[in-house]
Length: 98
Image (cartoon, rainbow, N blue to C red; front, side):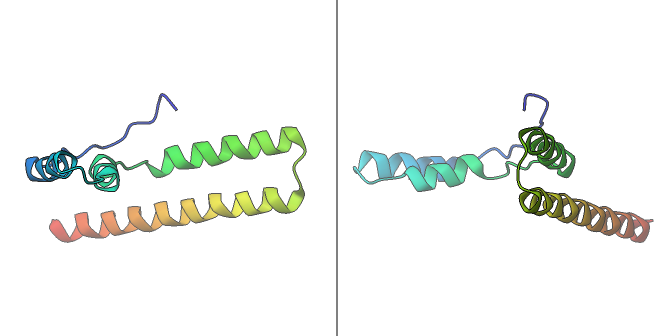
């Protein structure tokens, strides 16, 4: 997925210091570190949709069960619905700002 752009939030210094202090004290900070690193990693609807559609193509080529293919198609439908819902909300917000 080299073409997928992800939005990244820079972790604040306080969070990084807390993680380093835990590591210095011998405590496990892996969960905290993962939370800090994953914070703000957002995959766009279109990127998710492309991935699911590519998976659908793969399933079709490999002869997966029809029920499994339908389940993955439902995921595409949910992604599109969520994408349309967010676009609608953005349009309403933009309209109200004017």
